[in-house]
Image (tube, rainbow, N blue to C red; front, side):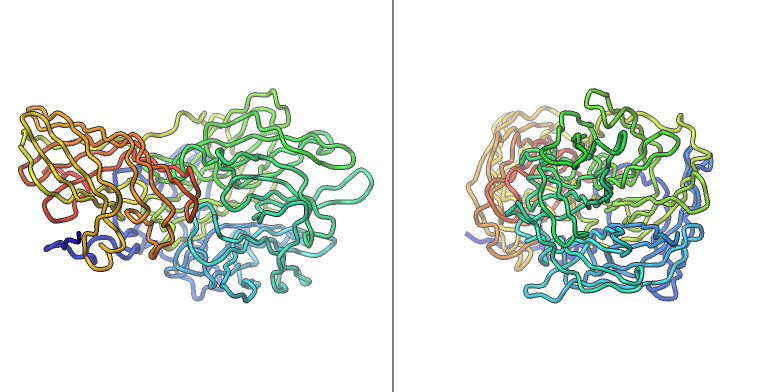
Length: 609
């Protein structure tokens, strides 16, 4: 059965996700420093010149003390999505700033390239040294996640190349880690070439590289990486500077933990303990989660075997920068998770002995850096000749455009920088990180009980992507104080393409009691809907084998009239079946809302006058 919406226009309903960049979803925490996205736009003469534009100094003791100062936007180029920042100090003490650029979102694209600037860490000015593009290929591949390192007097670039598209958790992305070599300290690089990986038959994207010198005078290049689907984080070694790597063991080999970006450090006397901080998405893809603290004791001959990951931080540090020590204290910069899937970039102090598996590790937040939307993947480097001073660089959605992380990935972003002056650091600035932030339910309007009957269109605005609702055909039956709702998912591609209401999947129903104020709660249990009901912007039959389990699906709402009801959604979404989204990927309904009317899309209760 197909139905048409008489007053529905798909162009008013979602579409371009760019609209999301000028709209706000459910109420979230305010950005650290608010500024108008247009008025703060850069005044660069050309994208190959960095002309920093200062950002108003945010509030907070870390800024008032001068520990964090001179915040500026250093790069933006229209709708370009710039991300994944790297800072590298050459032996000459000249600094390089590298990042992934190209494309209008984080989606992998053949137009992506690595921009490398010669960068002044004091003024943030710079000029383009070179662009590194992915090697021509069929099908088209992108390039991202630049990491620079030295090997036998040469500057080398490691990067990740994936097939074009937007695979969640990199599934079916055919990841290749590629190497490019510079003979002139960054003025040019040869064409990126895939690294040869031995002792593994899986593709890995390498995240971190560390050169380690042995007692016997030699040196090896170590790297950490994670596989497509984020099921294993592992470590590797190379003796030819990255052309060939051999897998040495696992860091986290646990698909249910969803490991990915793995930091790597060699600590303790003579660097005999390898320590890795590993991002875990085991508590949801877009929410806060955990970080595994993993260690491995080596020998004079190096490292081999699996890590011990018995310790956890109850915060998910996405893409942590290289750990850096100042005056015996350990710091890291990473993505921070707020309520309602908002993100920030934050500076943390880690207290405790990372190299001792019996030492308690505590995480303290020093400050947020001006950021919102899609942000972080920061880099930190010491400023030559300035003891205790570092420059930090990160990327962010334009400041003041505070939208959820998932839609923000489809819009523009900037590169920002700031100076960290540890001569002005007071440990009391750091506050112990508390429990995960929760997304509050929206208040329900005052109403009286209404006997809603017949067909409605019910739409859910999920917190993680409020601009992309899920739509259901609803049949309401009121009998006394009992309200029964039957729901049938709608094919979203058909809805967006033609405005047709095409039912998909099996219908399901639930019953609740409506009180005198029109309040009701209906628990639908654990219904299952097909991928077509929420294809995350994709088209075609790519999700034929995927379903969504709506675990603990419940509507808490109010009947506002005979023609409408609305309220809050609880429970979570669990992906089932292999395909574009890996099995067991979880999204929370926390903070999500719904609205039901006769023939139009409504995703929340109308705001009180």
